[in-house]
Image (cartoon, rainbow, N blue to C red):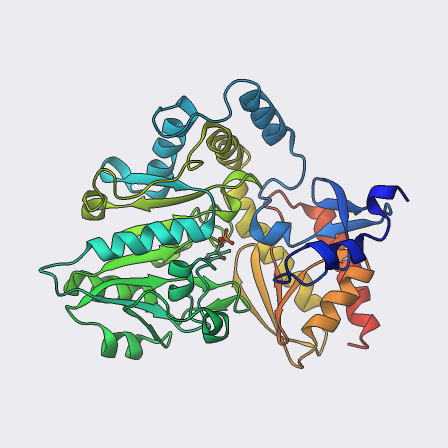
Length: 398
Ligand SMILES: *Cc1c(COP(=O)(O)O)cnc(C)c1O
């Protein structure tokens, strides 16, 4: 063991902010769908940095694009345009379907994309009467003050009250939405599959009804695609499954394969709301992060990885069901965002057992397992998952 990795757990506990629990493993490198810890143990990574590493680890396309860009022009500030930034903005208006009337704002994270979307909502004032913002109970939108105000988890907000005002959380039902919406609503924020809450699906028809009602009342429909976007659910964006067109979406996690970036994409009239000087970010949309995103998105298109997410997602579900474990109660999510609802509250024990078997999965709460492999996953990795996950279940006697 090298000196840099000796006693790392204690060092982590001493110097890292107490916001983080000390992890069980320190990782050193990755390749494809695998990572290795500092002791050389190999893990199958079926979390992909929480749906971030779309191309897996150390993909040559991403390595080459980032290396070339950092050697050319990494950052210039938003006083200047750069070719990768413009290319990415055009690519995103095309892939989202926002088209000619679409516009893009770049930040550096999911939370920042949602901050921009929150400010967009504030600009939809009508005659000054629109002061309500609706969001869903249990939805996660980020940890900065604005995105936290949108987040429907009181436990996360409590210590930091007061929040920016005007946000109301409603149940994720069509009835609750119908009861809550009126002409004072500036925006409705929706997470199409609640990832952090345990990969929870919306009720059938919710997005369609949300589109009708927001349109009728002049409210923006803003879809948080930070976890579900960029091919993850078997479509480029999860809203496409509902056949609707939103007013805005936020994107981050999977877009640049691990290089930090976030984006707000507006559609139609929502593109007219922001005016000069109303928002900005020093790093946002710099040539390095946008070149990374261009490379990742181009590779997703070239290699047909959106389709792969749909096919592999189905295959993965069959494998999980085929293990025939009494602990597996129900499968949720879409494509390669898979939630397992457990019959007993052993999610942390199960993810720990998986880790011991060299498999990275996630327990967002005691009754749910979240699985989000890289979009490049193939037959060999799914077969390996079957082995490792089967052993983890067996270790729990399940
Ligand atoms: C991860 C996530 C965020 C926050 O993104 P950060 O990059 O962590 O700020 C917001 N919304 C959803 C749906 C997410 O999954």
